[in-house]
Each structure stands twice: as C-alpha cells, then as structure tokens.
Length: 128
Length: 128
DNA sequence: TTCGTCATGACAACGATTGTCAAATCAACG
DNA sequence: CGTTGATTTGACAATCGTTGTCATGACGAA
Ligand SMILES: [Zn+2]
Ligand SMILES: [Zn+2]
Ligand SMILES: [Zn+2]
Ligand SMILES: [Zn+2]
Image (cartoon, rainbow over all chains, first blue to last red; front, side, top):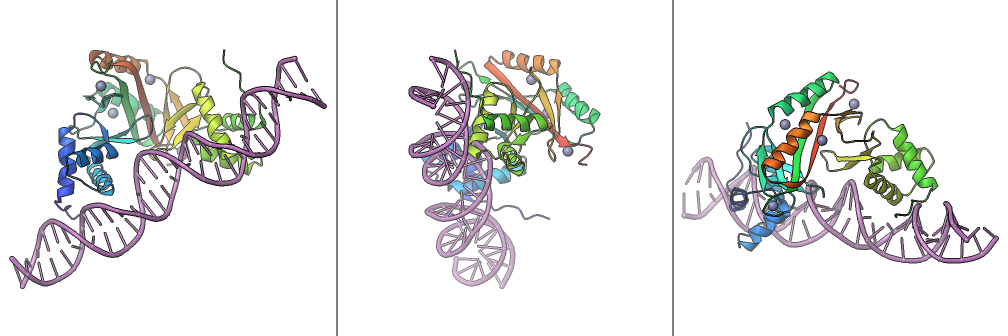
C-alpha cells in the first residue's frame, strides 16, 4: 500500500495550470506561468510534481525536437497527439489500426515488452 | 553550391563505425568505440560529424527514453524503426498506410508543414 | 611545396533536469 | 486546538548530453 501524496498548495497549483492549459508545456513554462500568476512554486517542485503526475499517468509527456519534455493533461486511455510546433495546441488522435500494425511488426520480429511513440507535429491553422 | 566536406581521417573513422554497427548508437558510444579501436577522435568531432551526416540524411537520428540522440546508417527513403532497448539492434519498417493516415489526420485538422515520429521499442529475442 | 581554408580537439559553457538537505508544512493524534 | 513526525519544499549545487570557442593542425587547389 503506497502512501497517498500530501495535498499541498504547490501540487494543487501545478494541477490547476495543467487544467487550464490547452496544449503541451514544459516544466519551465509551467513554472513561469505560476510565477506570473503570483502563485510561485519552486522549479524543483514543479519538476517533481510533473514526474509524479506522469508516473501516475495523469498527464502525458513527450519530447519536442529540442529534447525538452512537454506535459499535458490528456484524456485517459492510449492515444497519440497532433501538436502545433508553434503554440503547443494539441489534438488527441487515435488509430486502432496503427496500434495493431505496430504490435504485429514487433511480434513478427520476436520483440517483447513493446512500446511505441507516435506523434505528429505541424503548424496549426491559427499559427500558419 | 555548397562546399564538399573535407575527407579527413576522423570523418572516415566515424563513417566506418557506422557502417560496422548494426543498430543505433549514441555519439558517446561511437566515441568510446573509436577510442577502443585506437582510432581516437575528439568527442566534439564525433558530434559534429554525426550532425553533418544527419543533416545530409546519410544517417537517421532518434531519441531514446533518456533523451539521448542515437544514430544509425539506414537505407534511403522514409521509414521507421523497431529498436531493441537493450542492444540497439534495429529493424527498419515501412507502413504506407500509417503514412497516409498521419497525413490525413493532420490535413483534417488544418495543420501544415507536417512531420511525424514513429518508433517501436522493445526487447529483441537475443536480449530476452 | 605553398597557402588559404576548413577541420580538429581540449576545454569551457550551456540548458534541461536531478540531487541535496535544512527548513517549512501537512495531517494524524491526543 | 497544540504536539509531533514524516513528507514536501526550495534554494542551490551537481549532473549529463550537447554545443560553442579558438588556437593549432591538416586538407587540397594551385
Ligand atoms: Zn498553433
Ligand atoms: Zn499507440
Ligand atoms: Zn537486443
Ligand atoms: Zn513515416
């Protein structure tokens, strides 16, 4: 039995930002937004909170081209993303046939413990 | 007209390693292999050589879960990878239907300048 | 061989992320 | 409520992959 995490102001603030945000954002961006709102939270704490949320699968994480990790509160269940490189706006996408295809490829080649990454990046219509 | 890069011992050595390697490897791994072989090449030079090769699309680059960039000499043309997390062994994969699906999703949502990442990670049969 | 470039490599700098640890805060308990 | 003790915080240092710097060296055209 794992201990439930404490309900702290900082953790609540990070979650609140994630609920407000539409798209993906980095830990540092979230830290900046918090500072701007006056609800300042230490950078380490932002990182830790996001890690905990990601481990609990309450937020999705992905890496942009620069290698930064971006976080977003998504709907439950396995899905992928169409992400605007410029503003972060995100559309969740599903592709059952892609899932089957990936599993089949891995199986045919004798791979176990398979996972896949699939993200589509582009420029959204507002940013074009 | 761009200048052709010079034909140096270091560049040749890096290319030779890539030709020998079966799977993806990081810049530091390649640097280590070179050192072990006695064909020592500066780490900066390894990084630069790989960048040049990647820009010229002569090698593929991808990021593992840890955020490290891995490089591999692949066949020409757009494709994806099935990569062993443990030993790096790689199978190139193609999925025309996935390509069409990704483009369609992006188009339907009004995204331009679209690119996608798709990699499958697992444990290969030798490493299981 | 000569010479102007380009490439190299030791090293410093960078940027995202993680570790440290004393101080602050939560929540259970009395 | 106040005590208490484990958890969390945050300023700061440390880490790690990667990139920048720049004096030195090597390539290759002439
Ligand atoms: Zn946008
Ligand atoms: Zn999937
Ligand atoms: Zn393997
Ligand atoms: Zn593709």
